[in-house]
Amino acid sequence: MKILMILSISFWVLSADITLPSNFTTEFEQTITNENGKVINYKGNVYFKGIVETTTDDAGIEHSYTRSLFKWNYEEPSKKEVCTDGVQLTVIDHDLEQVANYLVDEAIDLKSILSRANEITSTDYQASYKDVEYLITLDDKKQLSKIVYVDNLDNHVKIVFSNMNYNGVLQSNRLECVAPKEYDRVKG
Image (cartoon, rainbow, N blue to C red):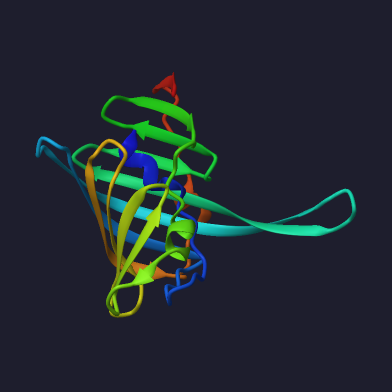
């Protein structure tokens, strides 16, 4: 499940001239290389929407927070849907006809990572967060283009985003993971 650790990304306006949207859609290619040189390639689409919610405490003071909804739609090498709200993660594996639910406990917090980012070049930024070094690349429009890091299992991870669409119309149903009823349910 370490390939899914990037799922609880939170996006808003951040420091270091990195501006990320309140929602986006994009295609992605993810490459994971283990310490023995074995490479796994994934392809698909990502849908993201940040929702600002407000609560009122006992003293009548309003507090706002952002809830991030993500859906990673893996098309290759196997068909999977992965949805999260930053707290719970649902994985629908269509090849195995299986649904698993997990609590997110070691997710990558991109908002915190980017807030620590230092500019290397006009498009490349480096950040250190929780003992992991990240290289973040923006395209010529200053949109997220690539993230590279080594995870805590010593896998080299590279995620390349293409056809990025910032702040477009995003229907809520695109963020849902709905599994057929006949799929097995597995506790994660």
